[in-house]
Amino acid sequence: MTHDIQNFENQLCETKTHFVNGKSMFSGFPDGTQQVQLGMGCFWGAERIFWKLDGVHVTSVGYAGGHTSDPDYKKTCTGTTGHAEMVHVVYDPKVISFDEILKVFFENHDPTQGDRQGNDRGPQYRSAIFTYNDDQARRAKEAADRYAQAYGRPITTELRAAPTYYAAEDYHQQYLAKNPQGYCTHGPTGIVCHLPERSPETA
Image (cartoon, rainbow, N blue to C red; front, side, top):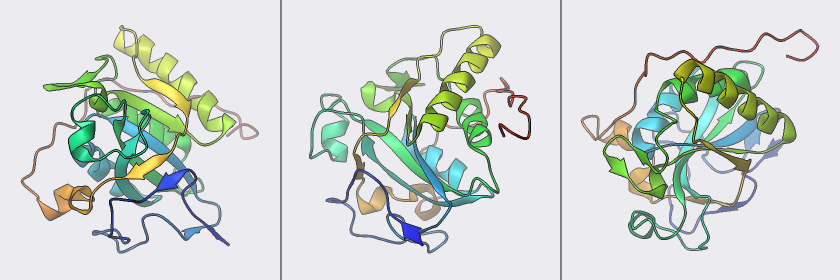
């Protein structure tokens, strides 16, 4: 059995397969995989971090969380659509847990900056986690609380149920694989997001 992205629109992206691993980006995901939308500022560098992880089946980039039904890069960058630049991650929880996904998410950007990430300013660059089930939502809230303690500042990451995901234009997909010297602001912050201690029954 396979499944597709829930709440998905693909009006901009004609490319269907991942430039790096050749897998379908939007449909036919193996049974048992899960998905999440993650916003960490510019989606180019964020996507590269996740496609390299063991257990991640496929990634893509797009726009989500806003109030318009026809976002594109130019409109989103005006800051008037409400959409954020997001990475859609499909992963195998038997190989990489959601808690481990969250650890990578928090440790590779600054989730305390509100509507910006470094020199990139505007709501499209906000930190965000858009979840697909109640367990993900609970774990995301717990991880944000843990990281706020480690950071010593309030976390501004937006937490909400996954809204419609609009796949971005072809040239944005796996941009840093196509343009190895391209713009990237992501990397370890040096602040650790500790994994929770869970019993086997709740893992």
